[in-house]
Length: 115
Image 1 (cartoon, helix red, strand yellow):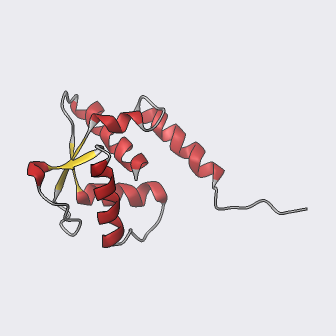
Image 2 (cartoon, rainbow, N blue to C red):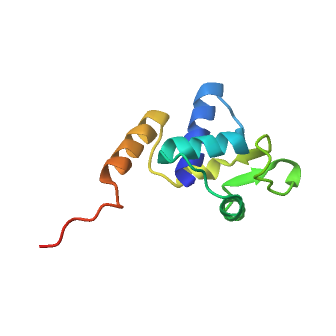
């Protein structure tokens, strides 16, 4: 999820030249998660709520106007904090895309056969 947040942050900052923290919707977050992971199925409501609450406690995201996180509302907005940039060692969207390709190519779910 942190990779998703970082990618959305960089895209918004690059495209809009924002001086402040960009805002995304829950729907955009969910769609980007599906795109990055390549999974057709999304995470469950409870998983999203738990992830977003944890990310908010870490200072990476915040709800607008101090509202509670409602992952059922695709139009609910989240503010991405600049601290999300410190999580991954990349500087631009292009570097992030390259990092994602390298990560997917490694595929940690495949095990090497034992001799």
